[in-house]
Amino acid sequence: MLNNKQIIHVYFMPGLAANPSIFEYIKLPEDQFQIHLLEWIIPSTEETLTHYAQRMNRYIKHDHIVLIGVSFGGIIVQEMSKYLDLKRLIIISSVKCRNELPRRMKYAGKTGFFKLIPTSLMDYIDQLENIAVGDYITKRAQLYKKYLSVRNTKYLDWAIKNMVLWDCDQPIEEIIHIHGDKDEIFPYKYIKDCITVKGGTHIMIINRYKWFNRHLPGIIINGKLS
Image (cartoon, one colour):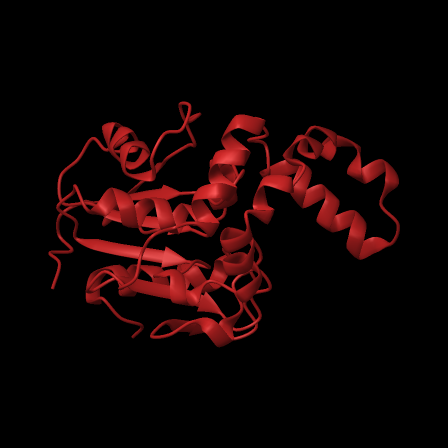
């Protein structure tokens, strides 16, 4: 069990194309935890996931930390963890190995279809609000505009490629996986051995933040949902 009398440093990695503001509502007791927000860096040409993870580790300034990643950020922190001594490794709305990827992503990786995705369209995300029709679509457009700010096409092409081609056959031991049963990106039916958030979608780190504020401290301390 972790010593909760010492400050525990918790590093958060956002999802694909997302900025650290997706964690703006996450609050942990300040007498126990200190939050650090990681940001995406632009990959170099043909950079491997392993090398990228090692570059990301340069931003880790403490020992024996808690490392938390959301979505594709969950894949990144798993790669980062191979070179770190961690207290906890936690992924949210993500996958632990290739077997948990949805069929469409496996197909995209196998066929190379992911290369045809027009990532340059992200440049037009600021215009979504102007063309959105309906309250739900308008709200979703506002979320995209606010949180998806990493629009560098070199990064996007690299991230999509490395997500669908991720080479991982076995989950890391003792990894903690938190997943919503209504996740539309990584469907729950493919996910094994996770802490289930009832009604949680792929963006539950934003719209179900109260669940995380209530349960995340205990999960970090005890390694399970209490």
